[in-house]
Length: 355
Image (cartoon, rainbow, N blue to C red; front, side, top):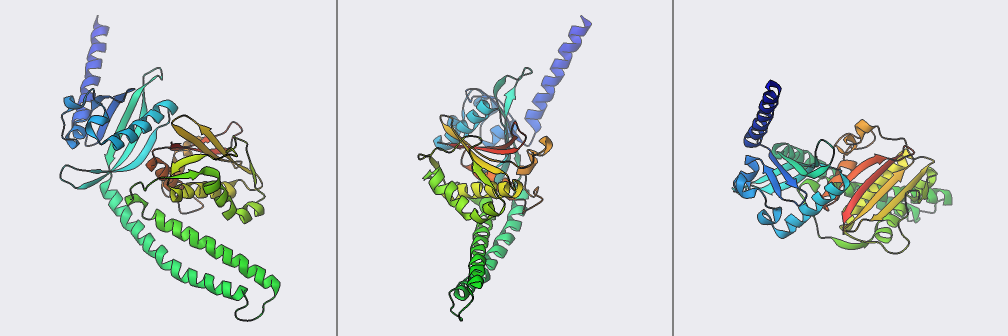
């Protein structure tokens, strides 16, 4: 009897601790069931929505948010439940009751019981407004520097083109070939600067209008053409190891510029790490979304680093923004991105795009 009493007391203590957490934490925390209904919410989250906790229990986001916002969140959480893959540290913007802007770092994870059965969603949102404002200042400086570099670089590119055309006198054919190669590399550098200029402002950019795009014709093939020389130099083979993008059209709804940034980063990384190896593109129709991937035959990513590679400034060979930006862009499309090592121990970057 004493043992049962102790267990009961222990259960009560755990319940009291949970209640204390939900009532006192400054974070927005909620639990939802499989149908998207709130099971438990923190007091701060209810206050943010000008509701009481009891008013929110048993209701869905469609009661508290706009139709578009609620639908986007419903699809995201549905994908988490289906795949079991959490969305971690997604940056979202909100508006407080006083009209001020707030930035939240949002982590949505599967809610599982002790046996591993998924019961719904757990979400924790942390206010990161101060750090975002500091980061914005740094990115603004990057934006200014990038913008100022484009002018001189463009002038150099024009001068090289004039030299290659013989505008300043006849030149040897081998020199012309070299100048044309330099010109192409300058164009590539201008494209990268434009990309960084876009990256430096992404934190404050809302999801732009989506377009209907042919995945192969509009996105993958043009980027492969950009990196043709690097692919040749590194003796990279493009194959269908994990499933081909179909030869017929695959129409996705996405922002072309953003999706090109995603594929450009993944392909550039794949070329870097898969020297003399191969790169593959995968495609699966999952019903309400597409599951895509970019695989390379480079060395595996250690398990403890699989999440870190998507954090800012974790890269050892670049700016440290590439993969963080990629995941952010995919999440803003309503999808998610993660890394898995394949059965033969090579990195495979997987991401989803809602239809």
